[in-house]
Image 1 (cartoon, rainbow, N blue to C red):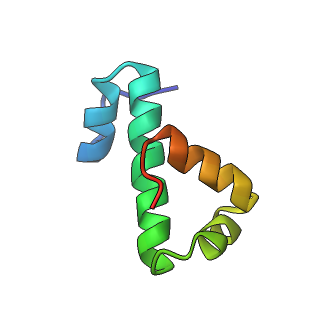
Image 2 (image 1 turned 90 degrees about the vertical axis):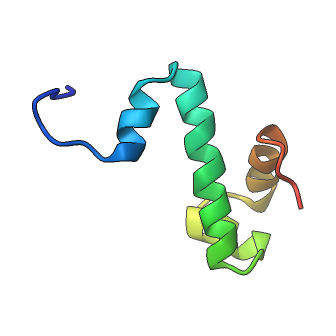
Length: 68
């Protein structure tokens, strides 16, 4: 349950102002971008860190329009 009384992270505040699907897409884009930065763009390693199959990673990248 969300508690409106506690302090929030600014990213969470922004996400809570969006419809769920939009917040979900924004999270995915940030999450996968961070993984790719961490791995120097290595998609196989990014998929390993996310504990997903590489083909699933590619599908997510294609969905968010960020396939390098």
